[in-house]
Image 1 (tube, rainbow, N blue to C red):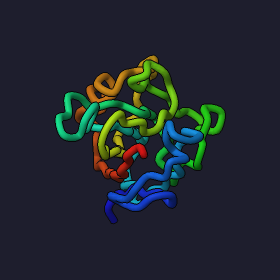
Image 2 (cartoon, rainbow, N blue to C red; image 1 turned 30 degrees about the vertical axis):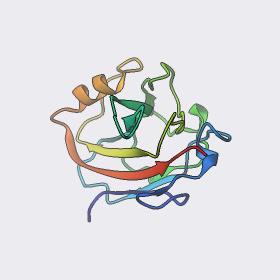
Image 3 (cartoon, one colour; image 1 turned 90 degrees about the vertical axis):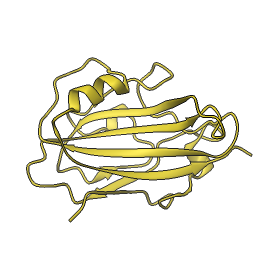
Length: 157
């Protein structure tokens, strides 16, 4: 059974509702997953936008959320999860606003793609002290059993 990440709020390659963006309450969408393989010791989640700042001429990938050491028996994260609601042991990294936590889509121009990437790891990572995405990816190297992604789209009106 493959690892699959989903949301009840938007479909794969579908529109992300405004409630999960800077144009509304900017809360995290509900996420669920299935197919975590045997031998998984932790999960990691990275949400990013490779179309920044303009999908017609992208110059960077903007990071919206970084979580790691999610317990392998977790089956998802509820809508509007706050740090107090995260499963025990989950650690956060820095987004590109230089803060922890979810910050939703807020594209300056055009329709952007938002990648919700879930990784099953064969290890529990050490406390990386709020790593940026690149530092987390480096720590995950050689430990990724499988990964899955959910892509959502958003364009400001």
